[in-house]
Image (cartoon, rainbow, N blue to C red; front, top):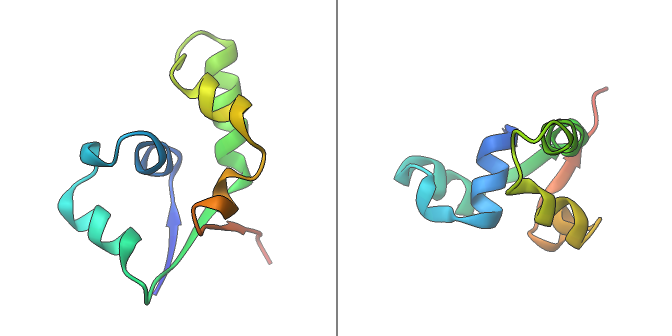
Length: 79
């Protein structure tokens, strides 16, 4: 199955997996699933960090440009 994570699910998977439901955690971790994140998630986090609405995301945005790939996620590209 292909999964496209929304920004919050992706953020919590990377920062604090315990905030995800057991079902979401199992789906993301399942080896048979392909997990995708959208480049729009980085854009959304950057806007919210800039507005002061999501300071926790600053660390994720500044640590590495390759964090999706490091976690086994593929970047979703619309057709």
